[in-house]
Image (cartoon, rainbow, N blue to C red; front, side, top):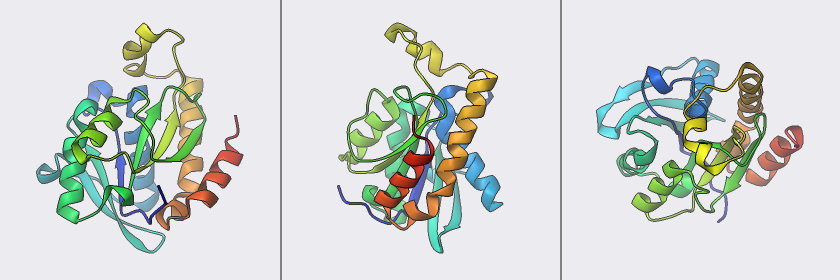
Length: 196
């Protein structure tokens, strides 16, 4: 797929205090950091099945969305938002945790499969396309497949948390480029800084 200017940024995670600081909520952590940087706040939006906000990024209007449907039903919220705002999925950036990347690594990607992430799977199924941009925030892997479910729903240790926060901060530095649709340049800058 070709890169498009971004009009919707979706951070994936699970709602509620129980999950707030878990590895699976890297997408929510990204939105929290972005909102803090822009001095804005996400507000409950029943129509979109999540929390949302309007932001100005790189001079353009961008909607922010944190689904409260739980990870496995993320597509319900994303579909509602794209239909309500008349935004295509190609104009959407989905931010999510990624087991295949170590903590402290972040990667931009255009299109592709779900890689076992149920949030991405549900978005692709409900929206009938995999043609959307992703920002993959590395959380590391427990090493054994059967341990994955428990691993993603636990808090990272202090060192891992620091690395994840660093990856998010570096990702925010290239967000203007992403918003403009300058993916090759954004990828080059982000992947060079976080080369691991």
